[in-house]
Length: 117
Length: 112
Figure 1 (cartoon, one colour):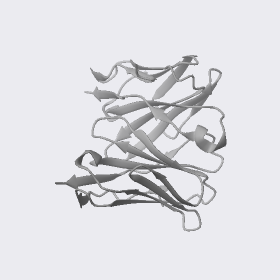
Figure 2 (tube, one colour):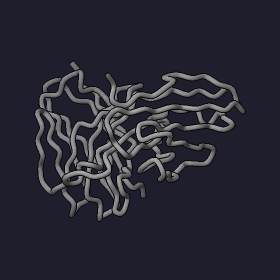
Figure 3 (tube, chains in turn red, purple):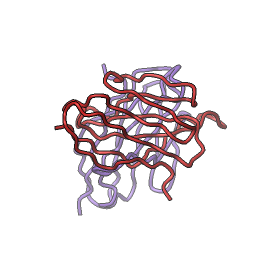
Figure 4 (spheres, chains in turn red, cyan):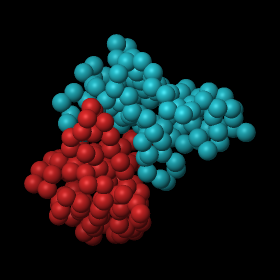
């Protein structure tokens, strides 16, 4: 079974629609992240959560919102989708603490390919 | 200046050769460095992490870190066609908590 799962895997929607992307993990990690990836721009952080009550904006949070429903679940919403939000979206997790800096290691879900027409 | 820089490639090497991938970073206080492999349309997969100056070997992979020169590299020995992918360098910046800053990746092509 996959440690980090994302649903849906593919989604095509229209401008103005509300979209939710979901992420679940069985790794027991406290910290979760949402990234988007665009050709030539690499991975960019949208939001991150260090625990259920701690949610923080990343470098490109405008137009997005998140919800941390439980330690294992972190959802990303696009309230009113626009075409330039067409991208590959990844959820990632990491430990909160650990021996040495290895807890900075992040593990990614399979991704959601979102197309906004 | 980008925080984490990589040559986009493609870097082409023949099968069996050593592939050398390089990454430079701007935050001198960075402490943790990671290499991810990403096949087209797939998610990044962690292959190496390094925290101390010098070399770290894991199978065919060797990560090299030089904090004074602010670069980290990844060597892939006996390159195989299955190594053809984009390799992402990631850095944990000073005061970044668990956050990582990613480079845009280097595309590696291993040719038969």
